[in-house]
Length: 369
Ligand SMILES: [Zn+2]
Image (cartoon, rainbow, N blue to C red; front, side, top):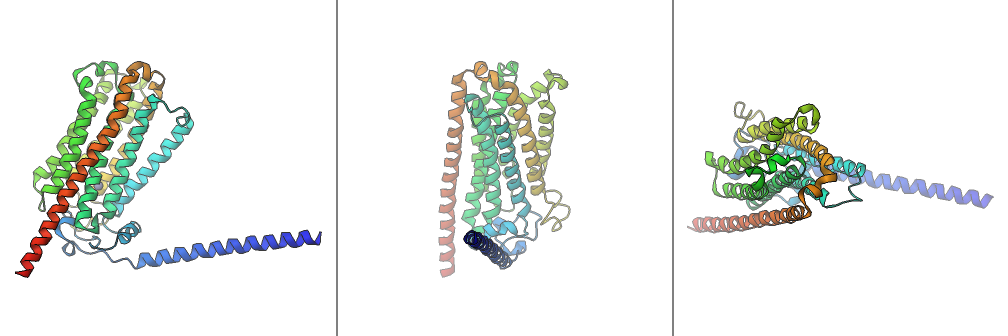
């Protein structure tokens, strides 16, 4: 009896001491983490960073260029002019992943993953890809000129993947048979793939070719292929909008809200507002690119709900409606599009690297006289 009391007492003390050791270790690592945050270099004004890193009408809140990668990773917890750009897409990514997990559990997607679910899985992966690429680019781009270019090329790969992931999901779950038989419907998927790749290639080209002060055609180069891809996707939703009664179609309201949010997001992407009217006053919070991120995140979450609704109403008849062959072609086309976009970004990165090396050499020669 006494022995068992001693053993229980000893085990109890051992457990308490283990808990207190763990607690003190956690407190120690938390305090060292907080002290490393306080040691991070302060943000600087636009005149203290190279021209490449400056944004129109944003005068302060820049992270200094040329520090270690760990500084830029830790700057996730620092206040600077990219903080909201990073967190808006990170949090949206978490919401997309959680919502899909709940949906997959509710409707048993994990257990019965079939061809009919594949466009949905690609769609969710494409959302996560664009949100993660964008958050990474905004978080780490200040490391160096090469990192800035390479990370924004990665961001454009995310844009292309997102565009094609949306096109696949909308085509298979949200389109009407009458629209699919139309001329646009017949060329929809190859055209969507081409425009997605063009968006990536044109954005990379515009980033590579134009420097401050940016001319108008830089923006056009970025916006036109993406705009055309959006018009193509919208044709499918618009046809449904005008051919059905809203009461019979719960996903229609979500598709309409999503379209409005996208148009508003596109407006803030194209126009540097409101910072144009208040230079220096929207540096940390409230500039146009942050509004674009926020609206695009809302648009993504709304569209995800609409696609889920459409998926549920089509899932049972999907393979019969399209045939396995068409679903298999779509299954192969998505990784091909990802590969082509990544390859384009890698080639562009090589071109930038070569150009920067040439500029360095030229600078050294000028210094030597
Ligand atoms: Zn962005």
